[in-house]
Image: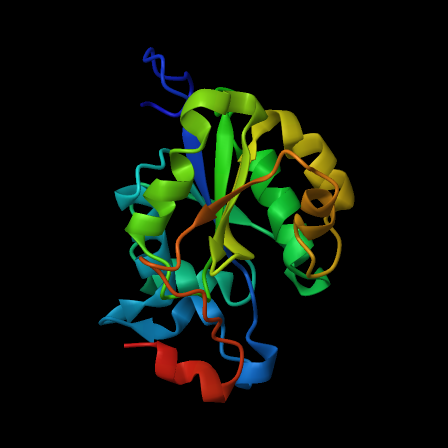
Length: 205
């Protein structure tokens, strides 16, 4: 795919959208994208999970230390989106990321950079929820029945999500109003633990 026109296959185009702008305030100001995991920056691991899970294209939203992330992380093949308003919270990164996606994308699969236990298997499982629903798709991974990430947003939902995304809520408020949201159990293949504080660093390898 060349980034300007959609593919000619019948299957929906699911773009990967990685939110990696956080400044790690509770980690002493260590940008989450640059935390080390499996020998490289955490942002590389998360972007790789989106690609390996079948998402194409993959857009990565940067904010805190964006220039350093660009210099230190190998994000070859990803579109980089700068969010100058990243300090306003995850909602601003979600809005910026959705606005950056190409018009041929039928859905966006949203992943957070600070959940290293979510890999390609969970991405692929949630992505499959778009195969039939296309632009109307709306799904989220769940873990023992508790909703989490990644979240799949069909393009028909992007305007509504963008209007409701404020602070650190992201798509949460929008999803709460949608009875059509499909929950995809991923507890057998992934763990949704966040890396928010120094006590959470043990989730990194």
